[in-house]
Image (cartoon, rainbow, N blue to C red):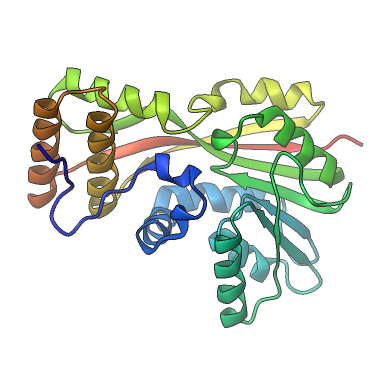
Length: 277
């Protein structure tokens, strides 16, 4: 039986974000924009700005910037006298970021590059940030070392990442929820549980003033329908649950969405630290 999401809600899957050309399709751009609008995630972004003292005159590097949702906000904050550079692997995302920056009249540099080998000189940034980046990388430690390298002594680093084991949705079949969410955590990204030892990794690099904040980010109804419908379909595709279980999942998500009762959330964590020197 074909698995689907609620009518009018195209499925999204984080598995597809590893394909940087596919991820720039309108469905995924819209999903990223919807996720970016979630109030509790915006709170963490604002707290990152506050804790890194990002403001006029700052040189900011946005690692894994995508098409620049946060990059463009930061471009406004660092005026006058500051600079903002966004780095991403996806040429398509960068082209879209340049288009949006030009339309907004913002001076932003977008460069193609790998977070594990940043195309940026040593000590080039006062503030370096990454959001939903380390979870995708084969060598997160190398990316952390690169963020340290490009940030000046006394500069600040901010990292925002989720813990996939905190995913929750109000599907009443507990065993089915466990199967679907465990499959998502185990397969969607490379480092689904990275936040659990990120403090130790940052301290191991010699970073100081490591601080953590968290929010349980609640999905809006449409995004919840897209995401949780999508991961149910993926679980069927990959054999984590059978087709009958997948149909039960689809029906519950669809019905709860139709009735305005669908609830989903995931835990996000902000880490900030100071580069020594």
